[in-house]
Amino acid sequence: MRDFFFHAPDNLQEALSLLNEHGDDARLMAGGTAMMLMMKQSLLEANHVVSLHKVPGLAYINRDNGTLRIGALTKHRDVETSAEVKATNPLLAEVYSRIATVRIRNVGTVGGGLAHSDPAQDPQPALLALGARVKITSAKGEREVALSDFLVDYYETALEPGEVITELIVPNAPDGAKGVYIKYLPRTADDYPTVGVAAIGVVNGGVCQDVRLGLGALAPTALRATSVEDALKGQQVTAQSVRQAAEAVADLVDPLDDPRGSAEYKRDMSVVFARRALEQALGLS
Amino acid sequence: MKFEHKVTIPASRDAINAVLHDVPRAARCMPGVQEVNQEADGSYTGSLRIKVGPMGFTLSGKMLVEEESAEGLWRLTTEAQDRRLGGGIHANVEALLIEGASGSTEMTMSADIQFMGRLGELGQPLIKRRAESMFKDFAENLRKEVS
Amino acid sequence: MTTSTALHKVSLTINGKKYDAEVPARRTLVDMLRYDLGLTGTKEACSVGVCGACTVLLNGSIVASCLTLAVQADGAEITTIEGIADGDKLHPLQESFMNNGGFQCGICTPGQIVASKALLDSNPHPTEDEIKEWMMGNLCRCTGYYQIIESIQKAAEAGGK
Image (tube, rainbow over all chains, first blue to last red; front, top):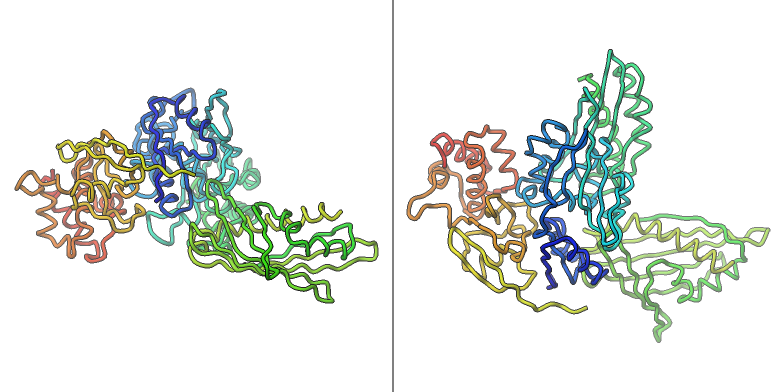
């Protein structure tokens, strides 16, 4: 790795002013696992690394009126193991538990993971299904962005220069919902998925009252399959209707050819795993 | 990696060829081109910057524009390396120009790009997507430049 | 673009002992342990955080020291393989790995021991599935993994802390 200037400010204002001072030459580091990988492979060069690891007050998990507010520097492992999260939003704990290995989850942060924005990351499909939002702070103040608007493209987010994610806001799943995350991993257990599907379903008297479907590793960003959701909402839940709805997923996805699977294979698998996830979330299996 | 893109330009084939053969002018239509220099042997060297999120790839190398054939075909071959990452590309780009009766020309651009070395391993899936949109931008910028 | 040649002062408590060093920003923790401090028990194999050979405990949690900058670890408490035994007395895991064929060439073993110690510290009686899930990130090319799992199970049965 080329050498760089390492800054470890102990407050957020200083971190932001370092970003503004060095502009394009500076990059924020949270846990640093993804960033270290990119730096070691010469894919990323930052002359000024501004580490957030000494900035206090950004690691927390708070319940707030039907949502969970999670500080951006909260480790993945803390979301995974939090009694608060398991009680109020078990799907959230589940998706964070599926990231890589425990040694990565001990270091990686919620905010850092979102800023990285790899299309195959585990939390995003469920976060989209839950309608999550991101709070962004800069020297000019704060703004909140829906996660669906925050994820722009491969490794690209809505973060402007001089901005930092400070909080992830996750609404609870609706009452009586069943949530499931299927991580399809034909290679090794610690990998990103070839296809990742998160589904949430509420069924009453055999009728689908609510259904949410998030798709990962199938497009430049994670997607929410709202057209598939609309086709199922208000309808009787049958194996046939779920199968048909899942088939529509093939037209929504836009996967890449990569070592985890060809675009064609991923497209085929998106239908299979969307169907299985919906079947589980809607109580058919 | 191969792809094709068609665009209709409200200009004559000759007008478009004039731009395509003026390599620095044509190169400026490609987003990310940083410099284009003419060499003594008639070839050109230049560099192209491609950004994917926080990652940047800089391809530097040679470009050669081949003679126009009677069928209205323009061909550019380029070999460029990413010195920092290692590896590079070898690309053939062709533009077929068919002038219509109304004085506008249909341009079909096709590209055949081979990735080599580390750029291929690490960059190909990402650059592939970007490359298609870059060529669309190139065709669009060329259209604006000519008309 | 200027390259920094600035050195950063890093203070670490490793296996209960205080260490100070001056390192460039780009020095990884594993390199600092091995080259600056002579603690060569921790190994680096893949360099990309997937094989687990570089596992150390940092403030009580296992991390990949090849993906950690030394400057990030400033002020931290670290336990490496050198700190697992209590003087001459081996940790039950170390005894168990020896008695149950938990290693052959030994290159992955420091990481296996540190990671499995972290497991038994947080979950003294893990199921086989829990062992497999926790130890997922510790690769071994020699043993085929069964003896590693068995070593951990036997250590847990013996009251493995």
